[in-house]
Amino acid sequence: MGFVRIFEYAIAVLVLVALVVFAVSNRGLVELNLFPLSVVIELPIYLTLISALFVGVLLGGFASFVSS
Image (cartoon, rainbow, N blue to C red; front, side):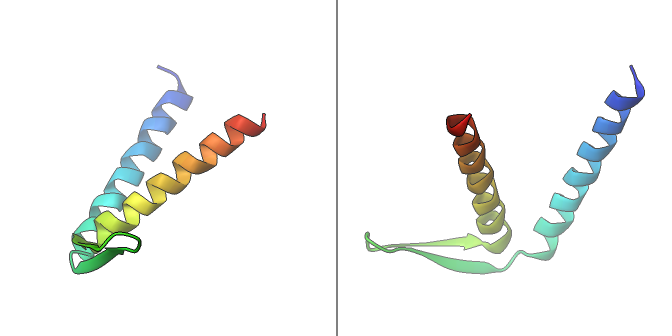
């Protein structure tokens, strides 16, 4: 196991710890209104923000894949 692999695991653990700390400190609820539909979903703040980040990363990766 090389230095790069250990470094990757260390970064992954740090990101995971940061996500857990973020989730624990942002447990309040927000209402998510899905505009065209008359649906209102109540979710924790951390789930809303992490989901938005995940969708953005997926869309950015897809856009990068399509453009190359």
